[in-house]
Length: 398
Length: 220
Image (tube, rainbow over all chains, first blue to last red; front, side, top):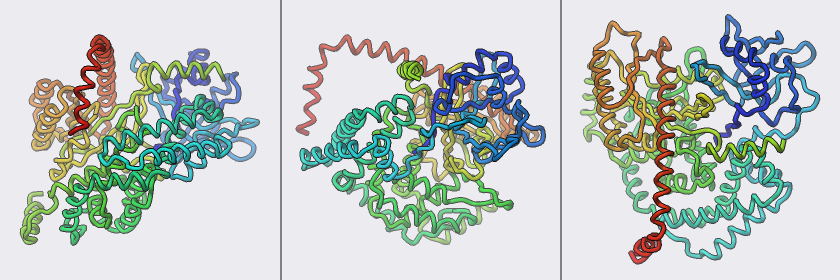
């Protein structure tokens, strides 16, 4: 769901040739802190590059606006806005390319330079290959089905997964109720589904040539499996989390009259609360972990404010957490703990990756909010007057 | 094309997908400028409308240090006292922690000491610690003495930095050094891991005995 494209830039043939064959130019680039653009490996139509090709991909920051305005060494003007590079060309429409990611390099002798991996070369090309893999950004079950269907050029992969899930459900008519064993059996099923998927030759070849495709296939298989399985396993999860959910609901019910000001939420965020609440309360309508995570992300990002010149101000954890606490209390959902457990324990496609990625962060935030409500730290002084006394006193202290 | 595929897959096995992922948490009192430090480091000029980040609470940065690819995930945490209890949820599985205090606020330095104590207790020495004295642009209002901060950092085995998010001083250096240290630690850990797995192979004979005693959980 991060949707971030990845490749090993230092092994990209374009970058390698610049570094090895044009060492002087490369060194000069480093000493002047110019930015090196490297077209992603799939977008390179040939393996033969001229010096002009390289010059067209070295960006010299302008004196006035070094962040957004550049010149290439081929004397073309370049602007960068919202991750899109625009190159003015003498004839026709300006060329555009997306910045897929930025990588900051540090050399042994403490030189620093930046590389932008870009969607397509910054030169007019005859044909651009249609295998645009990097834009695959999975945000829902339909994206996942589309990916498995189109990349495999047929329904057979989906059919295979369906078959596997069916046999699984027949075999396990009584699913284990404890979370550990349940996760392990479902994890086994996921492995089976993934194996069966990668037996498809087209998918296997594509995932071999690009790591990004493999990651997307894994996530799609996981999501499609969850989509088919959800009703059966979520019941088990709710059963085993019944105690925690009941405890949490008691706390939530005790705080049902809570107001935004009770949580020290900043006044300029008040207006975003209804929309965020609407987004978040839909979380139980989604069956896949992927969609639940996207829902959390959208809810978090919908809490925003703008400064006087209408720019979006990024919020800190101190601003966000109280709002999120409020949203969970007011959402009216009776099974937050089960939702959290599902998201935490049934994410298999990211196994082996570090648990510091964006999805892990979203889940942790939800866990923190639930933990905060459970702890009872919110109940505060029972006498409202004491609260105002405390508030005015703390204002005096400031 | 084929040539490249084979090369790529070889690389995958040696460095697990090419990049190492490190999780770094930012801890510190409410107004010490943790978030400004983070935003200054990321200097994300493309992020005006495309909210690829999660507000300013979670940010990613890719580095390549002498050929080692590193993907830093930096987690900001809430600094208010009432959220203190949530700390462990955030810092578990972290590779590094940056503890920020305000050089003009003694209380924020005391909080850093509390965090260090807590991290040592919960995570032992599995984590790289860095202490950052922020707001050195306000040097004339300093209340936390230089010697005290540095000797404390030395005592707990953390590196100490002076930073100013406002003037962009010391910020990049801090993150770069921390990343280097995390790389070193991981290299060291993988070496010991190799030793450990070879030990497991030696006691291979005992495995069936262990599994029978573990199977007792079925009855419980």
